[in-house]
Image (cartoon, rainbow, N blue to C red; front, side, top):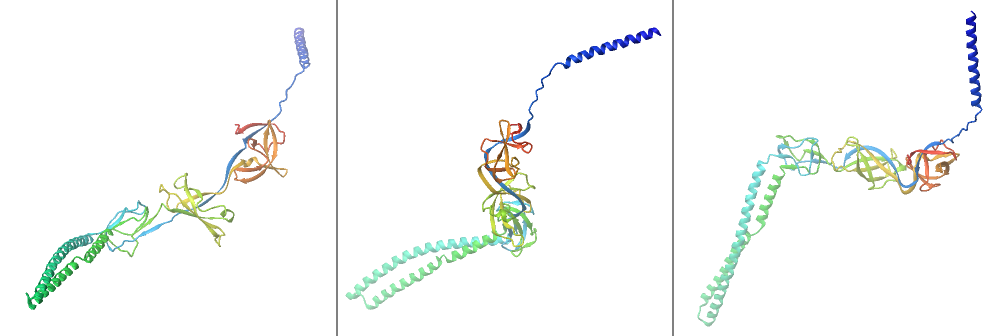
Length: 404
């Protein structure tokens, strides 16, 4: 019992010594002074440098694509259809064959008319040659006869020839002149081009009839309907083939009164047809209606659409982007940089790492960028994010934007 008591006393004494030493050490540490450096807080922001830009305001409208030209092909003759070469939906070029008629009878009529024309032309050439020869012979013969008549008259006046002989020679000259005159008149009739013109007209008609047995596409476009069948009859009384001209596509839109005066004829536009591509196609304003629709109070706008690729089809949905305002070479910043504070329109600029408010006068606002008319200049560093968190004189640190 005594040994245990002594051990307990020694342990207690040791603990007291340890605590005493610890206390002295703590007292020494607390006596030393420490210097604490407090760093000034900053606000992280994003900024952009003020530049001169071109601002454009746009509007996006939607509509359907339509064709400016719908062609209905009617044959120029009646007859039995021999072959049909197109189907609905086919893209065909101008001049490609759509269908043909049975041309056997037309071909025979053409060959007969051609042969008749050739015969008539040859006959005309022969008649002209005969006429020229006959006129030359007649001129020579009549000249000889008249010379003989003059000689006979001289003999008659000298008494060497009787009056009967004189009369016979005169009669012979008259009959010769009349005979050649009649012959030449007949040859002139044969050499007339009237018959040739008639034969040529018949030949031309036969050729046209044969040509009409082949019906070709009058435009480049898409076949929208086919109403003829091989073996059946077709005539000018019914549409044989319908075609849509995909080169002349348009979209008709409607715009409100606050937009109409910002649009002009021939102004360029951008057209997107989602069914074809997300890329844009060119287009232009073909006309702007000068008056509003009485029912809707909207103004009609016709947009022509470029379709060089042929991918856009009538009936497709289109989005049209129109420029409603444009200002070149103006001071501009992001719209979000401008805030309203204490009933003033301001932006915060960075000067020596401090936020400084600048009251500004604004102009055109595109929704993304805004025109600055007064208050700041080219090269100023404008806070575009974090501007609502700063006050005048706050220290800032650029962590994004043009300096990121």
